Image 1 (cartoon, rainbow, N blue to C red):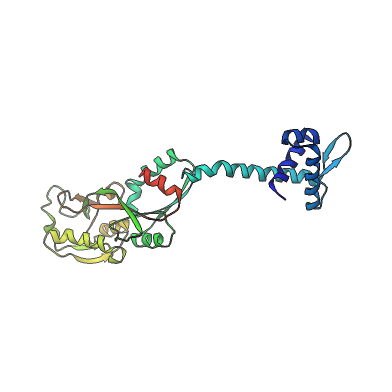
Image 2 (cartoon, rainbow, N blue to C red; image 1 turned 45 degrees about the vertical axis):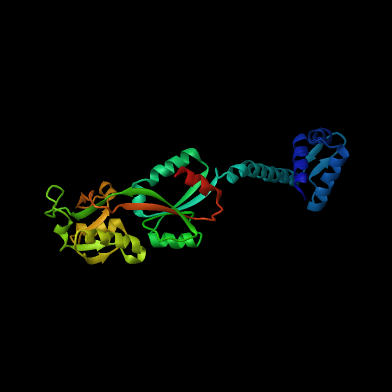
Length: 288
C-alpha cells in the first residue's frame, strides 16, 4: 500500500463515480479501477459495491475512508509544519534556571518568545546551578541560566542579567539603611551562604564581599535556595547576601541594605551546547 492508494480511494469515496474521480486525479478510469482492486486485494476486504449505475461504500469502505482521510490530513499538516520547524519557528526548547530568574528577566523573555513564535513550546525547570550543569552535559536542557559557571569548551555562554547584592538582616536588627556604617559592622555576625558544591565561583564571590571589608565570615548554614535563606534570616539564624531583586518578592520579616558601592554583582549567564542541533535554539538565542 502506498499513499497514492489512499488518495485515489478517498477521491473515489467523495465522488462515488469512477469517471469523475479519475478526472480529478488526472488519470484514466481503468488505471483508477486497477489501483482500487489492488487495494482491496491487499486489505482482503470489499471497499466498494459497484453496479453499472452507481458506486457505494461498504461498511468497511466507510471506515477505511474516515481513517484514510485522517492519515492524509495528518501528512498534509506535517508537510505544512516542516518548513517552520526547519527555521526554528515551531518546536520545543528546554530551559533550566535558578530561582531569581523568575522574578527578574525570564518572564519578559517568555512573553516575547510567545508573541514572536507562538508555536514554540517551552519546558521550564527551576534547578540549582550544579543540577543544570549536569542536565546540560547529559542533553536534558537546551539552555541553562546559571550563576558564575565554570568554563568548558563544549559550551557557549552569554551574560544575560546583572544586579547588585544586598545585605539581608532580620527585620528588628539595629542596623538599617539609614545608619549602616559599612560591612565591617557585621563582621562578628553569623552568616548563611551558598554551598561550594553548587558553584565554587559563586561561593567565592560571596566570600570576597566579606574579605573586601576586611574579615572572614563565620558560616553557620549553607543552602543554595534564596527563599530558604530568607526564612532562616527571619528566624534570626544568621544574615546573608542575596541578589537585590529578592526584596521585591519576599514576605519574610527581613530588611535589605543594597550594596551599591562594592564591585561584586549578582550575574546570570546563559549556557548552551555548541553543537546542539535544535533549530529552536537559534531563534531563542536571537531573542535573548
